[in-house]
Image (cartoon, rainbow, N blue to C red; front, side):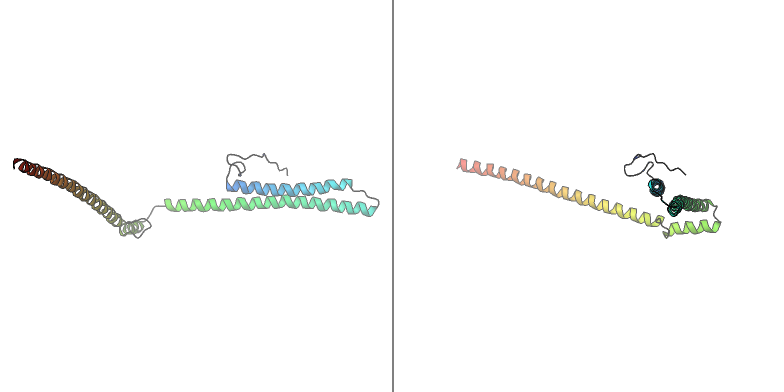
Length: 186
């Protein structure tokens, strides 16, 4: 089994090409397997440099060679098994999603439809019932109207106060003129 990576950051840094969690996990499993294979291959290569003076040394070297080969095969088998289990898990999850979707698409009996309609009207389902929604809407409208009326009344009071003040000022100026005219005549 030859394992190779075409490195790269893909579209998103930190995620190997594709960015999906399952893809990332697969790449991690591949990398782990590749690291193990490279380690045991290097150990196997180091056997070439080992000098053998006796038949026992050759037998030991051969035994080590077979042990390294077994470790490489075990690493590859572990990777294949993990891939198989991962694919089975994904297939199971996908099957469950398909079953849920199929269940939703099944035609409902008259009883089920009546029960759903009753739950919607009473508001016992996850979504709120029509009566609850209408009540909330009317409450919101009442709050908005109250705010608007309060603002209008405040504006009218301010306007009236300003008008009253200008009226009083006008009367004062008229009275001043009147009294000035009186003082001048005397």
